[in-house]
Image (cartoon, rainbow, N blue to C red):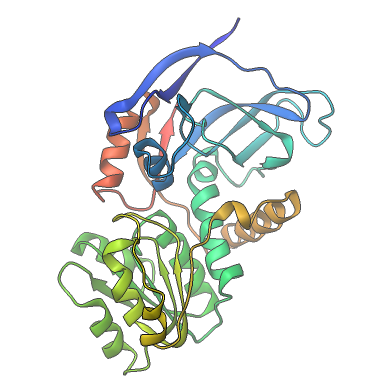
Length: 325
């Protein structure tokens, strides 16, 4: 049988738990396609799966997004054929030379989008899409707070928000990241390890605060995000880069202004084929228009995936990170 290289974990833990192994190349079942990966996206959720924060049955593969060419199709597949250029979001297992997935979870790539761009933007770009275009439909003239603005999701969302006409307050962990954010149009950058986020938001908005906060950082920014919201504002907590938010007394939402909080997950916003296609069309249109530039700032060989995870968790990365084959 044909073989392939893939990354697996047999137990949860640090980056060293990831193993590069030789495995049998899968064959697509009915309704599935087999994609030969050309580029694979690396995301924070992959580190959560690896560490056990988001438990998976073991042993397991890692990675949820990639882009490549369809190698083979299973029975009853009429929407794709071998040779098609595609991108996907799917169950963990994308850190591999080949990836098997349901045909209705891949989307066609036009020639204007490279494999690297697609692998770098499917999960992060669709996350930005559901945050600012579905959960809270940001309008021109609004001021919003986006935590970790120089990250993969942040830079995509920042460009999209500026194209809409919003004023963006972003947080960053270093002068280098702040400079990067400003270069992409961020109106105000707060260095969260040196400045009080909520106080700076109050100053920037002349005491008005913001109607919505997009927070992928988690535990370390939870209170600052709530304190930055105007009464009846919405806190969107979509990630745990600094650890999960736990032990919350719901009364704090009343105390801080009758606030709303949601803890969303992308899968619930692109769960059907129609939802996936609509969100992807919106994203690809924004990229094609030039409103969003997809920047791949880190590339690692598949065999060097442990370093990719270490750099991501140490917040050494900016923009998007991919694995190459």
